[in-house]
Image 1 (cartoon, helix red, strand yellow):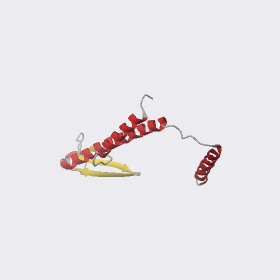
Image 2 (image 1 turned 45 degrees about the vertical axis):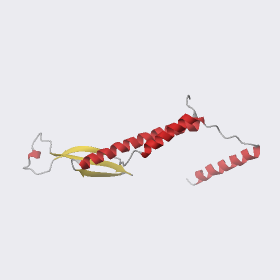
Image 3 (image 1 turned 90 degrees about the vertical axis):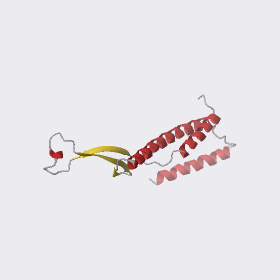
Image 4 (image 1 turned 180 degrees about the vertical axis):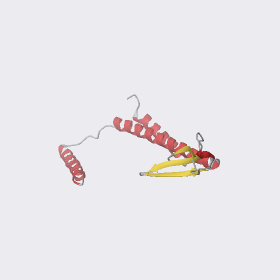
Length: 137
């Protein structure tokens, strides 16, 4: 790895600054749909007619539940588009921060153990930690 810890820490601080500037954001997508109303005499019922629309919908799924909202063309739609763009920027910055942090972790040295007693206490502590997690399953 050609980068030093100091340069990676500077990059991480820069990314944290970029993260603060993302502004308001929301997850989801905007889709454009045309719908048929179901009336037999309506023009949309004829062959080849796309249907009524376009209707702009904001769609997202949060914890397995789907949400949708019809958006008005104009400032409301632009607001949602900007917030979705900010969310994408937020996700990309988070991924980049994770990568930089992992590089920093790889470059940092492992702390040295002073004596055998400290080593045995550390092993015992870690063993108990993982056994507790194993038993709770």
